[in-house]
Length: 368
Image (tube, rainbow, N blue to C red):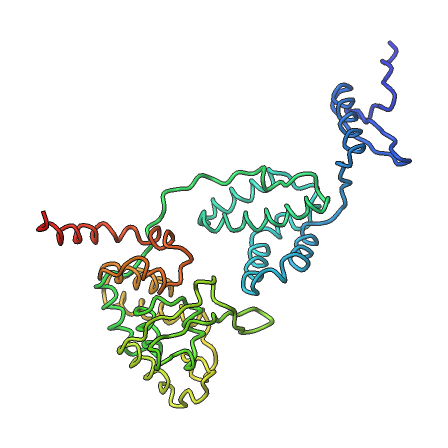
């Protein structure tokens, strides 16, 4: 039996059909499982060619495009610390899985598989959202530049928000226990200042004598200390615009900071030297800070106390919790912590407010 004659421009290619179109002297092709599907694809292709909607897929790898996006579109738009974070997120979580693929070949299911893998590995949803935002920006620019026809990130779905984890803070008993065991530590003054100010790790490690303003009785938070492999330590601006702030200098804070200036014996003779440093006067690393916290906690646990592992950020949460317990107004706390909005402060520490609200209600009970 003679094979059915195929329409003009369509030929059989194995189990599929290939349709060819000539436009302005250049050949274009599409494929389909059936003749009808192929004819439809040809019609769609012709429409896109005639209306300037066709994107000719180039074999540009995601690795190559990501670096172009960072250098040409983000380098002059973001802080160096943010750029480093973008690069790290890509290198740690995306590069090995999709880096060698052409950006035109990456589909929604590729992105979805990454989301699922990272969640199964225990990644926090908040971190996953940051990765999704970075990748969305990268692919959206590729779309605007005509390198892809659609953004695959928009075709993947992040899981719904799970019940929020309550921010961990030390109880008053844990706080007292930790500071008792920390008395012999060379970072005792740092821990004490963190508990009294809520400073971030990079902020307190980047603190200098010139930031302690005894005339205005404030501590100026003007920088954050960061480290990059191959570059070493460098100073970056604080996390957000509101992170650059002044924290009131109380008498006990002044005493702790004065003690720190003379701690190592070499004195902090230069006003631009970091107040909290190692025994050589060199910058204090994030890892070294965590290691000293771990050492103190192990000593506490070895003496039979039930004590959780904590990070430098727990000191910030502990300060905020004690502040709310003591009756500090959320708007004031927001300013001291350097949060960008009051809603952020309320959202992070709402778990502390019920007891505070009950106490406030008792105070006005006699008014009725």
